[in-house]
Length: 214
Ligand code: CTP
Image 1 (cartoon, rainbow, N blue to C red):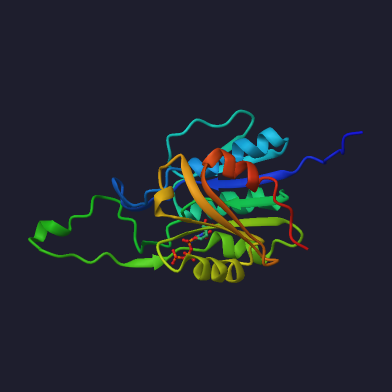
Image 2: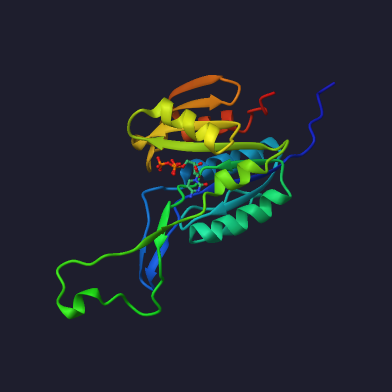
């Protein structure tokens, strides 16, 4: 007889966050959202109930997935925390901005009007969503991502420990916007799985089958 699996409730974050300076300008990043959307799709196909918390991206919502659109890191924290309260697993694929402008101006930033050749934008730290939810995960599965440009394994291992994730998926800047990526999945139990030049869809298929390390 086929083994019965209870339906998991899964939260996936995807895409960049936008941190507004004024009504028309923001700090953002190159994240396409593809990896997170593929994870949401793969989890749904596996039979999970899925909430996808999406930063500003133009990607179609995978069939059967509940999508919550957000803009900033603080919006993403609120939406992800609420969804994670009801969930069994979190895949934190979003490229959350680490910093935001101290103030969001109500009108356009007019720094050049006084003839200045330089201007200073003061930034403050955003909350770390993965670290904050990793601390309170209990028996729930938490998977984070690390995009590194050098010293990848060491830095990814540091994030795994600091943010109390069960796994961290290490990739590099060639993954940005691409359909294929090479990743190393680092586990809290010391496991390492290398996947070379796979489609994001194939990588997502691996990720949604990860079991919580004992
Ligand atoms: N992350 C998060 N909240 C943040 C920043 C990052 O939840 N404010 C999550 C990302 O979704 C990802 C993981 O943390 O799963 C790693 O993000 P990254 O920005 O690479 O880590 P940092 O610790 O911010 O390191 P770096 O200085 O290399 O950017």
